[in-house]
Length: 345
Image 1 (tube, rainbow, N blue to C red):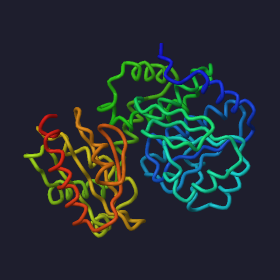
Image 2 (cartoon, helix red, strand yellow; image 1 turned 60 degrees about the vertical axis):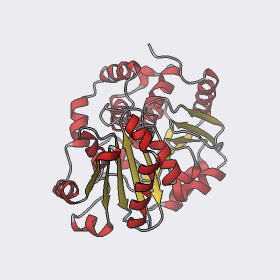
Image 3 (tube, rainbow, N blue to C red; image 1 turned 180 degrees about the vertical axis):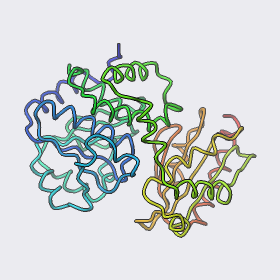
């Protein structure tokens, strides 16, 4: 049995919204990851069993290794079809905002979603949600938004209506947002949910292979280059840094998703508890920052204080507007400030 994490009042409101709606739009954050897509497509498959017209709209491209997911081919990219997406959002009875806590996280879609007349529902697990939805289901203690979607469907009494396709998407989101269940995944209820998803006929081993073992030759060569030339270890701080420029990414025919998981690699070294990856964004004039930690070290605090970001205790992200040299210097400043916690962890 699952504990009743979501307030019953919120369950009742969302159930009523869904029951009365004919057209539903699901939106998620810029550069969607496995949890963003898993929760969105998982909810989409459920709502389609309720005979609703459902569209999933994302701000921009998502990684190739997630294109196998059931329903992914029908996702609408806002950066390609803005006018059509605006029409769908404007006509929606309900707009489900998944896996983000602020309208700014959906980039160019923010204005039209914020001004749309449909009832907005937030389902998310990031800290400090902004007040832009009629119903806010926000639980940072939960491992993934996909897990929250599963809990919502079950609490509304519709477990039997979760299809195999929907279960595959939900599992993918849970798996990717916990690093293959290697962090933020000590709750026994996670494994109860996995058992229930397995009852729907999913092949979790095949899903793992599709997500983690279908990379390009370019990614593997880029990984070798990163480990040999672009990883710096700071043993006195129990930390490591990886950085990549646009030029270096182009040298290895970089496509979106090719650096997925790179930030986790240094944590495989004995004694390293904090890892940061700096990557010049190929689309925007900024540096994307990924932070990971193990144990009790709060990489989300570092993300917030030094890199305009945030996230979870062991997995966070941010942005830096400046040169790579300046970003590296900012990272070193963070190490000095957080040295006591790094040594204590």
